[in-house]
Image (cartoon, rainbow, N blue to C red):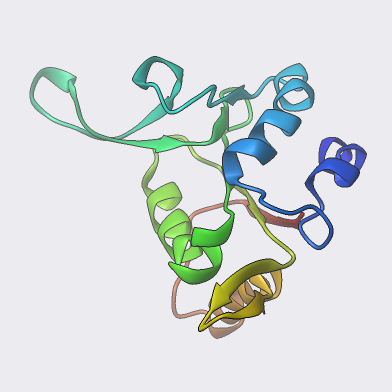
Length: 157
C-alpha cells in the first residue's frame, strides 16, 4: 500500500488523464520490485509474468496465465486494471484466473477510482473501484463462491 500511496500523484485516475494499466505498472514497478515482486515489463513475451495453472504429461506446464505481477515467496498475484476493468468485467476474470494459479495465496487487485470515457459524445465516468468492491463484498457476504485466497487486497488508484 505504501508503494501505491507514494505514487498517488502520478496514478490518481480522478485527476490524471489517459491512464492505462501499463502506465500504472511502470510507475509502481520500482517500488514493487524492491519488495520482491516480479512485474511485467512490457507486452513482449519475454517480459511477461507467466504462472502455472495445470500440468500435463511428464509434469509439463499445460495451462498458464499471464499476470501483471507475482511475489514468489509470499504467493501474491498482482493485477492492475484500467478501462477494461470497468467495462469488460476484467475484475471477475482476474478473480477466477488468479484462483487457479498454483501456489497463489493472496490477490492484490488494483482498479481505477474513476474511469472516464466518451459515450454518444458525452463524457461518462465509471466508478471501477466501487464496482469491484461491491463485487468482492457480494462474493464474500453470500458465501456461495469460496475463493481460495488467504486474503484479497483491493486498492483504488
